[in-house]
Image (cartoon, rainbow, N blue to C red; front, side, top):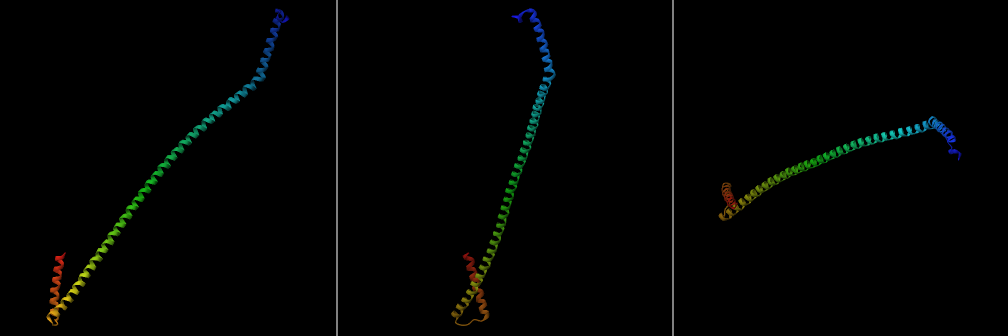
Length: 170
């Protein structure tokens, strides 16, 4: 085998080293720069995408915190409005109760005054009727007609008797 002879083998080694060097120089000059540039571009895009993703995540977290703060504020405001509405409803209820109580007291007072007026009127009517009956009975008992002075004296006596009976019966 000729390729293993030392004379032939050393020259073959030389040309292999030279061809490998040329291939390496061609790759270094023409193939590696576009490959390295493509890799650097890809690395830059990946880095920019990661940075953009971090920015978007940070923005999303910030917006989420703002949303939660607004939601919390809205919840507190709703609770405050609800508390105010309950307080106002309670106040209106109390005012209506007071108004109704005052109206009931007024109606009760009017009714008591009317009852007292009717009672006095009834007592006055009873006195008048009692006086007329007493005079009529006195005329029949005496058998004669009484004059005005007699009428008055007897009416006063009858009224006093009725008033005393009324006071005792109470």
